[in-house]
Image (cartoon, rainbow, N blue to C red; front, side, top):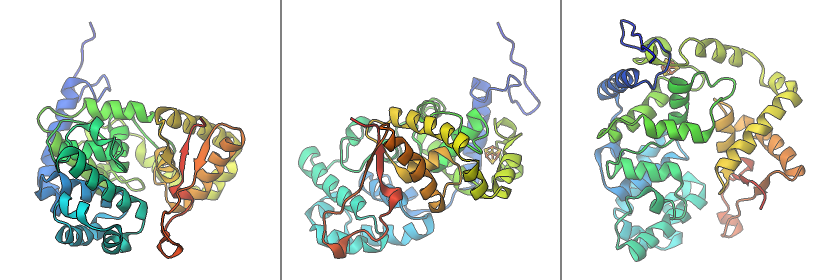
Length: 337
Ligand code: SF4
């Protein structure tokens, strides 16, 4: 039987952060850090499933600071799921207008009506049931189940995906080495029993404040001694920042062949498809809108080979109502039928 050695910090020297003792240290340190450093955000003061749902939909498209104002205004206008369900589509779009991405609000509106008609006005607590509602994917379903109902589930947004990868797998720059399926499994595995709410908030907060895509603050990170990426992430990020993106793209074919394989792996894991922008974020940490043409080009090469299907998001509304922010990044990509 393998003997697991411990460093003074308590980290397992077998190098596995998911080892129960190392994991225990990570959980305690991260929860303590979160307790002392968490931002005061309005959706962290409620367990109302509808309010959590609204906040999570908003946070998928705007930054936290902007979301606060919109969230408070939206909740003042539509304080309950019933009030949103009763509202006309045009009313809802009017309140939402500055946020763009109208598909999200029309989906939320349809979901509110389904919750009222099919679930008696109670937002479901079950992750699988939540995902049957329009516009609710694995992340939003997990967030509602956890942040509203206190369930110990793991789920991944961009920040959580980065943190889970770095801490438990290793460096994710220039590209992630773990599949989405593996990361989802890890996210579920490492939730401390009975503390899912705080843990998931802490993971997301660490990704937003400390373990950022471009400038991880490892020297100030409370879990640095237990992080699988700690030894290599700074050099990898710095190398990436100093290498012109154009050069990375020109490296071209060989690199894109690698990405083609990884895209197909992501699409196999998500039969419903993935938005192009989200796909880029999974493949390239620090992915921005500037990178959309790159990922679009790689996916297009797969489409030409009959390996991928690209859907356009179409607005149901008149030309005046077409989402002005709609672009290539909002296209859904999936494996062909
Ligand atoms: S040590 Fe660095 S890479 Fe690891 S979690 Fe902390 S900030 Fe992220």
